[in-house]
Length: 139
Image (cartoon, rainbow, N blue to C red; front, side, top):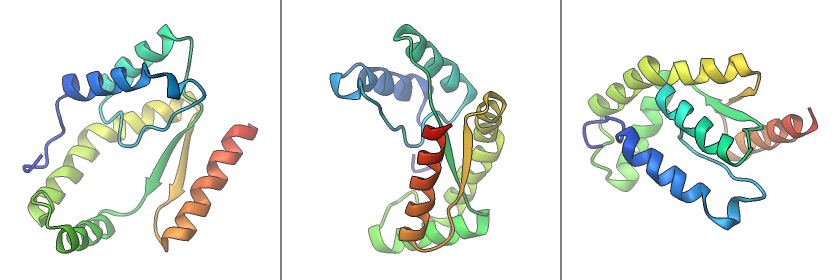
């Protein structure tokens, strides 16, 4: 993580599989930051298919790279995270563009992707997210 690399699929897939087997997810769940690779999408599809389930909506919070660099450098000042320096942040953004954009495209093809503007005050972004979830539930 300190280098900005993704945690290996084998680790994240096992964590997600174990978590989704818990009773408290029977009425719904939210995954944050997973899946990040198309292999993880395929793995999640397998997990969900075994339970005869599917994703209702995939939310993508959007912001340009420079805004993300700015935010994460601010987080570094507040928390002292060792993986929040500009070189590592830019590496993570490169990985996003190389690998995670394909995940976004897969979910867009399925018609379950909803993009939400992630710029602005937290309350405004939260309102946009909640509206997007409600709209997806109504569809």
